[in-house]
Image 1 (tube, rainbow, N blue to C red):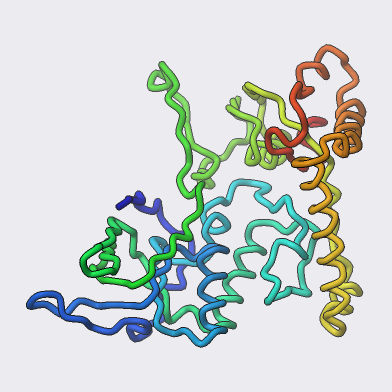
Image 2: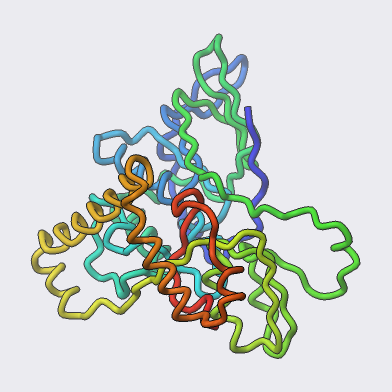
Length: 329
């Protein structure tokens, strides 16, 4: 039994289309008829959609996806901070069974990724299976009945199989900071970005140098009056060699899909070699460490400041971030 907190609101809706209760049948539970589905899936991010599409491709139609928001995308729906983008090349950060030859950049931004997921949901006929604005309240397994009893904000139903695809980071972590209630300015988490609040000319403090800060700090720095960043532990930062994908290459991928598959395989093998070094051969990471140190030295000539920004742990012990401009700016 577990709980998921309510959504803070979707920005766009796919929930306006009306569909019949695909995936449900009614089963008796005492004197009542309770909707029942063979497979219940939580979430419409990459995990939930990927599972649903594979079920469809294998001939399963008796499944339901319950989604607390009104649109598809998971983290790529909820995170809209400035500069939000993927740190994995687009050819790899997509379903292997649904290649996208039209990626505009090597590292796509949030909106482009969400639109890709929307297209996949439509292409594979997943939308009719989604129960929108259905936040999970409780899921309990009955040993006696050998099925799940699932309660959402909209209904109660049962399922033979329950697949949790909501991801580990679906809620922002709000730190407990003594005295923060006395702060008279505006406070918000990067995962709940206030697009209605203009940072131009403001004095801004950012807590943390994680994946989100690495991306949004270079976007807001030119417009703010003063920027202070509080860092506990410096991360390894490797240059992200982002660039637009030329139209000629996109056309090649459309006309000759094996070319895109070959490029994807090359990226996959390169990343697997990195994983090999992280897990089994740490000496293989010396090249990556040198690359990151050279990147830092080029952007921070001051040796004292550079020392404060240099990690003193092995690359891979924590997540390494890919960015070109975070330190320079």
